[in-house]
Image 1 (tube, rainbow, N blue to C red):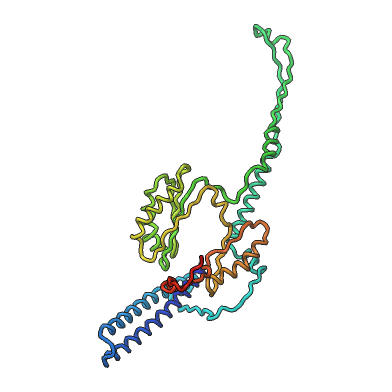
Image 2 (spheres, rainbow, N blue to C red):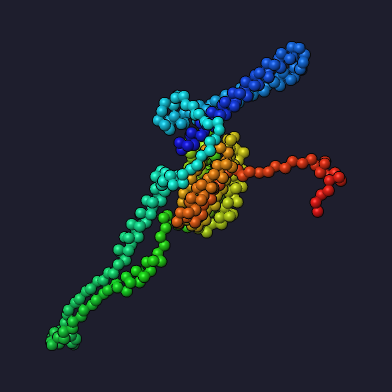
Length: 360
């Protein structure tokens, strides 16, 4: 969360500086246009257009200034500082060349990653549960004995005359069942988290710069009202954060997950025009049985003052190689960066000329 607040303030600060420069340039052009109008160099229409551009630039600067104040207040509140504290982030102009110590990065990850600590806690709890089950499944036996006398007769006197001693020793043991249980113990599944037998849909969206209350009121509540029309729904839960939110829809066991996703997408498309401006189009993610077991157990986010393509390339070379050598990790993927593209521009008139032979 601290990283998100930090870079939000950095982005708002850079946007405010850019908006200030653009406003100053538009004011200068408007002043020059007024002087040129005095010598009949341009028309009144051109001057009014320059004035409109200057007004728009000042309005844009005011809007960016409000975003800058909100980002500054969020970071100051997170740091337990006075919300009116003047915070300014100094970003390096040139990205220096750097090398990441893989061993040190892994040590810091093990020490500071709360997700990894949760996994270690889950492993310890699973081992404790397994040890408890093993102790309960050990050899158990119950022995009972009874000694009595009986006799049969037509009368009471005959029944008690010359009784026959019959030592009855009954040994009731659960050894067979215990042995069977111990033999089947290695086949018992052991998982860090229980399987989810119910399919579910997760709808996620973002509204950059909005508080959690605004996201809940303007986006989450409206989408929940629309998605409540879905059939075969066993439950629904939502979460609204600063700038983002999500809705989880749990379906019945026998529900058609593909049809439910199609219906949800149609309902979201109908509600999309009523959402506030700036809201990203909601994304739908389908979770089937045991999807949670197939997902990543840890996700790392890398931020750096560089282009996304360069960050992705450095992360793939450094962290991808380092994590791939760790025992127990089956796959490492690096996503989020924009790949480099080649843009080819050509003249369609010249390309269609007979003088240029086309390859066959």
